[in-house]
Amino acid sequence: MSDLQWDEVKDFFDPGLVGALPDVFVPDASADDWQTVFDMVKARGWQWEFRLGGVMSPMPLATEALVRSADAELAELRVWPVPGVLVIFRLVVAEEIDFDIDLRELQGQAGVDILCGFLAEIGRELKKPVLMTPEGGNRAHPVLGYDPVLNRVVLLANPLFR
Image (tube, rainbow, N blue to C red; front, side):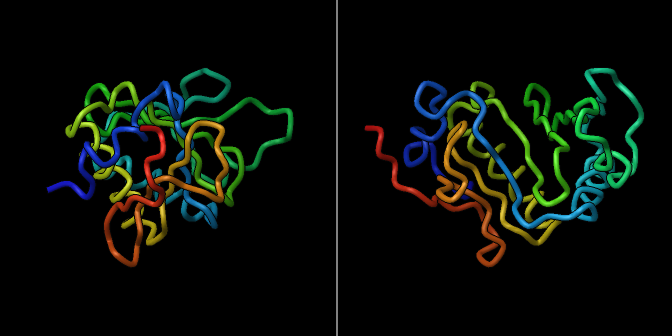
C-alpha cells in the first residue's frame, strides 16, 4: 500500500499546474549526506551517470564534487531508480540536496508509488525530511514529503487546484 493515493495527490502531479519538474530537496544537508546519497545509489544498483559540465565522468567523492569555483561547470548525478524514471541531482551547495524528477514520468498510482518509494529511501537513509514544492515554488511551503518521524511520505498541503 502506498503512502499516498492518486486521487488525493493528482493535482500535485499535474505538470500543467505545478510544472513538469517540481523542486525536491533535503534541507540542512552536508557533504556527508551527499556522500550517503552517492553510496546509496551504488549500493542499490541503480543505473547512474555523473556529469561535469554535461560530460560523463566517474563519480567522485561528494566533497570533491562540491568544492568548485563559482564559475565551474555544473556537476550533476543522473539516477534511474526504476527504468523510465530519471532523477537529476544538482550539486550546487553541500547544505541542500537538490534534485528534479519529471512528473510526466510519474502519472497514476504507479507514479505515486515510485515517487513515495524513492523519497522514503532517501529520507530513511539520511534520517531527514525530503520535501517537494511546485517548480520554482516557495520552499517554505512544500506540498508533500517524507517525514522521518512518521517514516512515510505525507501530504503537506491541500490540493487547491480543483
